[in-house]
Length: 230
Image 1 (cartoon, one colour):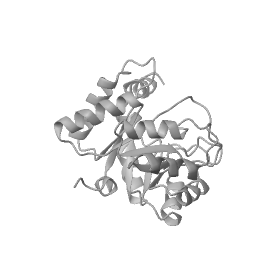
Image 2 (spheres, one colour):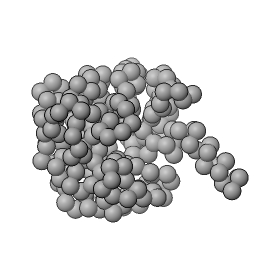
Image 3 (cartoon, one colour):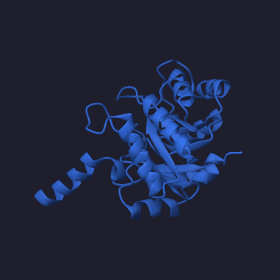
């Protein structure tokens, strides 16, 4: 029997391997290589965007006997609800092989008109994947708990208008979720250093997601250039 995905993630680092249209690394094969490198470095989970990327990563992991859980999502658009915004997107990501499907877990209207509860129920009907709610506030996370998700994250803190965008992870929101939501809480969003990741874990995070600071060379290069030209 495969290990429980959430147990496998506990106390560890999840690396988000994402690149977007027009970027030099925008290729599922490249993202798969990045994911494999992250696992070699000790990542206990991988987060991947898009059906093709999820398929490539999960296929490579299966061939190599890697059992690291893959959290999949599908970003469609750039405004409003765009992280796995509909049931159709969520089912497609699950069928592509994701262990956990990350969906927008806010209380905002969804493009297909379904509620979060209906989306979760529909996903349960069609797949066996776990469901992660990417939240922007405590109220979002409480609603996601009621909707029946398996895990919540601070992913959308600072992006929905309910909370300010912090310089670094939103540790205040993280602490609120840990205290009030009886689910594993993933720290995600603006974790840019090992010290910040450690602080999130110390604040009660079940696991910590790091993306840009590990897998986005353009941003990392920009940080160094800015420091040298200031």
